[in-house]
Length: 390
Ligand SMILES: *Cc1c(COP(=O)(O)O)cnc(C)c1O
Image 1: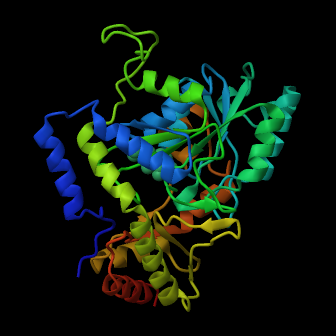
Image 2: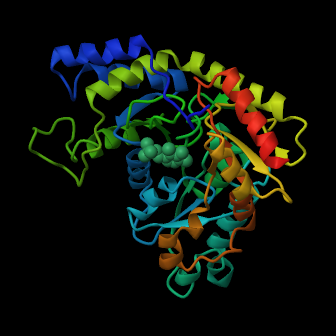
């Protein structure tokens, strides 16, 4: 048996919707993106939705809106997919990493509070939070906080929002893994100044490639629409460009696919929760496997991936190898951003800088997971994992 790592959930309805767009010949800037933006913004409980061609480009536009650039600082965590902190670097701003909560893998609000307070004080107290290679230069202005809702579980937002209010910082939610999740019954994507959902084929819903920025701020929404469309303002003629912009538009085929997926999102999230429940049940008695932790504040988990922790003395690499031999793919998840070669070279990060992130990076293992994973596949994966640990 070979079990796929993940799979998009595509039905005849999606295929028909994309085919219908092909018939119209309107392949970009048409009615589909408007309908998709309205549907997903309504689902997420946000005033505006702005479709973009990837989650990464959405995050980039949020960093621009937060006016973080040229040495400015953005507090975020290194236990994430690299796009979250790359989006800060695109503006030559600096990701100011703080470590994560060991239970959830989300940014630790106490460290966010300490870092913001120390940066406000300035001097040596502030400097120790900076990446090693930047500690001797001028200290940039702190502009924003970018929490990541890792694996579909919202970060602990209330204390983060309090820090942001106290220090007048923008909050950009990297909600690329958390569409549909709720924190204390409030939907992820509605806490900060703006948030981004992503629709790569392994996400909870897909558009092929694509993303959506959601925001309650009218000024941000107008800016995002201009930035994604080569810097044109709404009243600009096609070849007039008010500001430096990008081609980050989402095409009509992708938007049509996204609209159907939005309408099916609750059904797909329910299936993902069912698959997670199957895993939880079958792994309950394995002492060397720690199952995903769901915080009390997470009133709805949007299961993006199913990530277990392989506890010592079990050897994760050996477990992965044995699973692979049995046709079961698995992934170490996440590899800490600060230890990626580019980050080490540019900023001088070293192992030991963010010990909780590093420990999670060493023991976390994502198992095959999607809304089309069957109970039989979960049985097989769990049996192979049990054998691999024996
Ligand atoms: C998927 C993802 C992104 C980026 O999304 P793309 O659409 O692949 O550009 C950003 N951050 C996190 C945490 C993600 O999981």
